[in-house]
Image (cartoon, rainbow, N blue to C red; front, side, top):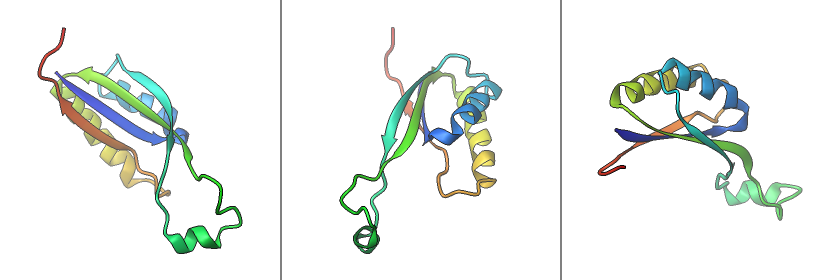
Length: 101
């Protein structure tokens, strides 16, 4: 069993749920988060609102699941990201679990 963590912009919320289901990951949790990108100082200085915090509404999903499901999910995410027209790909990581109850 491993922990898979997926982050993306809010725009992809429904697509991620579909990807989890296609990968046979039926049990998962999600949370709203603020995503941040460090921008070049020239871009910040040229902005009308350079003093404002820039963040994106994002989401975080996580699930404790089996290796096979994670491999399927990663394949689906790679396919999804190849067809994107934005610079905001879905990101995913896997964390091994040493113990669980």
